[in-house]
Length: 486
Image (spheres, rainbow, N blue to C red):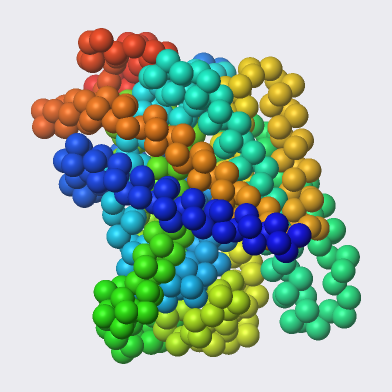
């Protein structure tokens, strides 16, 4: 098993370092130039778009709003990768990895805009609102259903099952460590109890449908982010005098001659970019599944909101983890990676912080399961509209959550890393030829904003556009009425 684990890890490392990251960077730079730097110049508009209210769903209820879609994607983005993943990047790549993590987020924001805007354009109706994602724009925008099915299968297995099991494994591990710290003599039974409890909670939420997942994510994401960031700000304030030197250390290690001579810069670049992309998911094709579900008046609105999610995840949450670690003068070893955050938290705030961090891990892991399930459900519906397929998938998620809690996540995590890379390549292959459509939508949005209007899109505004299921006059009538009332 160790030999297989090593081989899969080596394959995954080479795949990301020599293929996936370069492809993503090249295309993200292309998207940035093509869109006129949308991730920079439209930053104020991102906050405005997130406040947009939804209309009405076909069943008479309220569809998922822009803010709720943001919360669902944030729930999937903000997982244990923000705590353990960033720590691992620093452990392997040193402080310089943080600089490259930031750089990656700024560049790939354009990819996030393109994929979520396209997901909105090519979304389809369902009884409670809308669903969509890369599989849908591959079929409708490229007329390549085979490509969409391939993507749907990969993302369903990767996010819906593998990553959900890893999150429950993390929950069980955190609770076992806390129990041992508290002096509990026997903990062998705890993973089974945790697995059963988390599986039951997951079932309650996921069998309630997309609306219940969105409501749960909207409630939990602000709580977990606020608690974690507040703890980080306290640590930063306690060590305020060291912050300038810490920032200087990040930049120095990113470009230092000593690191270049030792090959450390290459490691910092790969680790920072890889963990950054793993955390913010820009270009991977996951967040557009949440973005497509929102009821908005213009596709660009959700593209902007999801771009803001990249900044929220990497520049805020991941940076909080990085600062907590670097202000505690860590030892950079591979083995210390997952425990760097815990050790740093305890060193600055005391033993009680370990228990609070455990609670944060429980929240981020559980909300990741909800976000992952949302993604899987949308893609299962693409493969088969049968309600039995949806029920079978939800049962599989509940089973994966239980099995993940009682199993070992080492090899499964590496396999998930590899399958996620495949998923990203399929998505990027679709984004490249469709980017022009997203940029045309952006031009339409900017023109309406210059005219002083709240942008509203109908498909007749783009002659020659094919494969679009929604965006008829009836779809945006409620938005036009609200605009007149406002």
